[in-house]
Length: 250
Image (cartoon, rainbow, N blue to C red; front, side, top):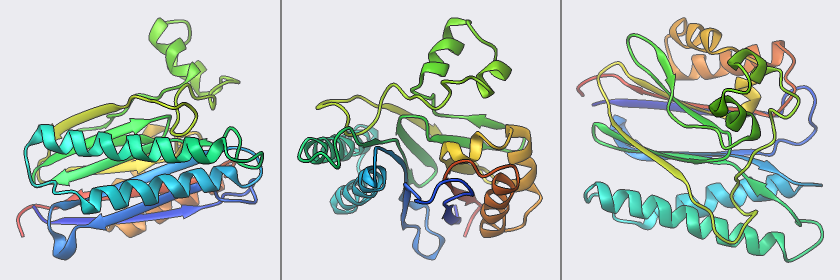
């Protein structure tokens, strides 16, 4: 399949510093081989920016140096190893000084190998699959609100306005060891994958996100329109989005 991809990030209207970070690697000449990483940092001072930047750099370096042309088990193993290495390095940095104490970051990684997608996540940055019929969330948030949803204690509408909706239960760099959710699924012509930080999903309902994506002809126009819409609705957090489109045979 021929692949197009575009990503962008904006600080929003409230926060002075953009603590989101993203990387796009591969996909040369539209080839369906490459990966994207998105991270949303947290911590005092500029520690969140440090954590997210470390995550994207370390994970991308590890994946770029790995031979990921093997089978499913090898690909999953390499993605997990890259996240482990990033987690260890961020944790070591966080305990090395008062300025970086307690820092951490979400991370969502998508690796495309031909007509198969592998997605890993920790925290509440999300990956969505958009096909001909619908947009559905692939990742599951690691958050207090998600736990309440899973237990049936609150409704999805209550979750959007819950006072603890931004408190996550897992992050890279906050513990010496972490585990991650990993998903694998086939891709079809016309599919799209959206990676985004919560600065987008907190501002825009899923229905509006998919309407914006479908009303724009290019990945670049869609991503920039999503960021603009989130800012128009308040821009209360940093906003980052990456859109990958699978456009059929080359």
